[in-house]
Length: 103
Image (cartoon, rainbow, N blue to C red; front, side, top):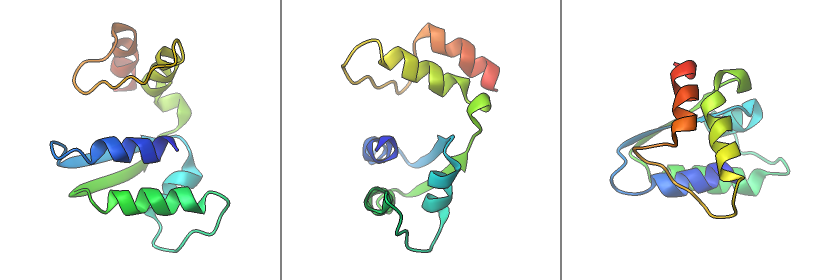
């Protein structure tokens, strides 16, 4: 569901080329596969692939959980309240520490 939401946001015309990173190897494999998915989450995979076709260029990359501390810091930051948060250019200062470490 998070990937569907991310692709939905990326369908904004101002995004030309998008890279989606995730720590779920099975989801990344399903998104990169040309074979039809018939798993329990197939409806979400089909929806995500359909939405991704509207993007000019997009790639799906697997990033191990240990190598993506900034994403987990963002999740922790968003769990503090029930509102949706979107950062396009600036991120919370707490997260920048992890972004530097991920590089």
